[in-house]
Length: 429
Image 1 (cartoon, rainbow, N blue to C red):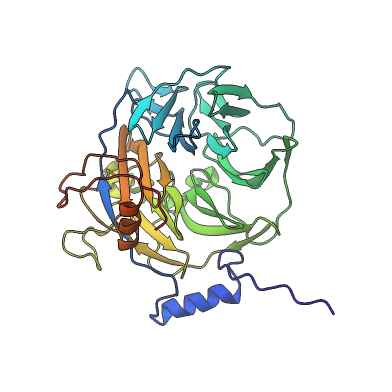
Image 2: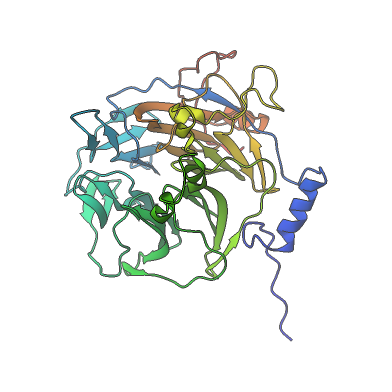
């Protein structure tokens, strides 16, 4: 008789299992799940040298390793984006490439070889080995379905093969790497929204549309996707049904319903979708936000919630409850900066000190150890070009930071009580 397969103790592997139910019961009973820890955050504004990219949103920013093995320097490769030049100018689509050297604390403009992609925004980018693979996006000539790769070592552009099996042209989709497969989900092209899944086999460069089972996500764009273990999380996004618009009044109910807040999880081995049941007060529906894995936590930042219909305050309408319950003196909480704790599947509002980054959407968020680097985005129609750091100031992170020999990102955030170095040390925390 064959032995039963071992139980996988991973609440994200199968969100409907008894493991998750047990964790949820612990949360409902007021018990802290094993492994849950308190994290506090601090905003910083590093003084970055060099000529950085102009203000923009809808760009990509990809963390790559050092080109010199003797120098442990991480870099962020930024590509594309767009901004609204105002009356008479319209949208300007960007196709430039910039590099942020974390160790040198500086931007530089690399000399790229090969043929770069057409200017675009809303494309996807994923690091595959030493190359950043780009797909799709939207530019002045319309939507794209092309594939490009940038070698981060030689800074050489390569054109991907044309394939009839590629997803249709789109922007606002996500592309997530799992092993040798690049999983592309969702997006939009004009008034058409997609809820399809496509996989690119990177060994054969062949596209496929694998069949899936279970309650998958509805069609959407501007969502966020993240791989946690063997599970692909899809959260939020936007979808407007043009057929419904004619039947709705001008109360704003339609627009609010277009901003999604659900989480669906794909088991990438069994290709089965399921709903992720969480507890705690979840973030409002939104698109253009970011999800980043930091230690065992999923960090959410920013997004657009459609609140412009409620007074036209732009992205700053995502106020949440500033100085909310649980914040200590000198700290604040808000719903544009939240954490999904995978230890108990609970949403919590992050506690932070320092002057927070302006609210935004269409930005990028990159994890450097336990910390987060946020670049650009839009505040309403205003493009942003800043670089802000959300640093983990918990005791564990501080201990690791003291022991690490990392790069120093100077420049304490405004209104800081401590004159600490805001280095992005990546030691274990």
